[in-house]
Length: 90
Image 1 (cartoon, one colour):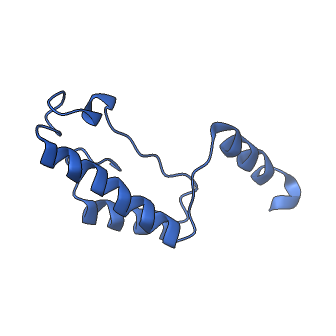
Image 2: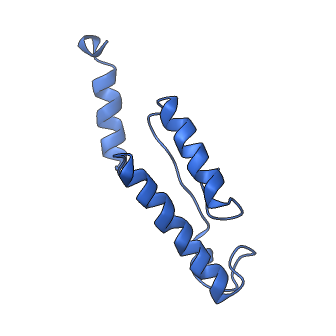
């Protein structure tokens, strides 16, 4: 899974690279919103854990940016799917 909750950043970066190499069109990242505060989940039990949580995101987002990968919206995904389904896109 692409999440800072229990997944070391090095593993996430390898998974991202593998997905990109396989031309996976969408990467989905997740986390439990209570992890944004100390003590609400088993993943963030201290200020140090919270700092590592944010560092995970900083490294992952920098890695994605370096590869030219950016965020999108649901509308962007739907537009890309629509374009890909057109006969002239083949």
